[in-house]
Length: 334
Image (cartoon, rainbow, N blue to C red; front, side, top):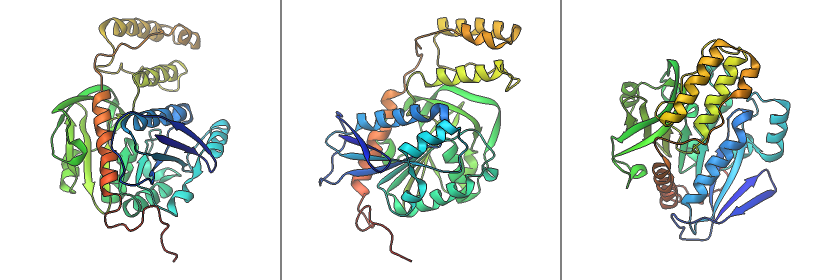
């Protein structure tokens, strides 16, 4: 059973089907710092909650949602977050078993208004969690702050579903296939040689997308994901549509490339036809004729995602009390 906590009072319960179990009746407490823009905020909540629900069984998981206040939001987005999320300060005065930190809109990290708070989250997580998952931009932020590793920008957005291969042994990939497919959606990459030189262990990589997953053990286990195992089947389609809308609205001058390895041939052909029309007639009404489609995937990443998060919950259960005293206790007063 997974218990989802929005804010200080409201909760929702769901039954789930398989995964690790605790030796006692205390819940496994996981924080989700959701940094996604307003348009993807609720979809990201749902994606992570659905995946965690699926990989739990008799395990009681409490998910707490946190927000960094300096993230730019619309009035409606800010109101939604105030109503349903806890302030990041509530997290920084306690501890969690596990933490997931999502990406955010592409940015120059060190100049963003939220950079100082995000650095505090990185430092806090190492001493107050059993393990943290750093997703996409959050992985770039954590490695920059911890080891000064500068990411590099692609010439265009990397988007699609890419074949990945296991390249290292670790509990987090235990029982995984030797190869799997994983969605990626980002403008930046981390140099693998710099990661290795700083002591990161790359456990999965893609010839096209680079390091897919890498880990580092400090006081807490950090898992860094440049891909998006939490994505539902339609996530890349929705992103592609938003990128095309931005082009039609003249917010960008480049028509976005189609996600690679994602659409089947028939669907891809329809989007190529729409691309030609949109470039020819770049007016807002063109978006009204955007192809409606039930996305037929070329590749499926769900099994690999379930294995990853099953292993992560198992790791949290196994290591939650090791060398950390009582779980969820607040740090001693200064």
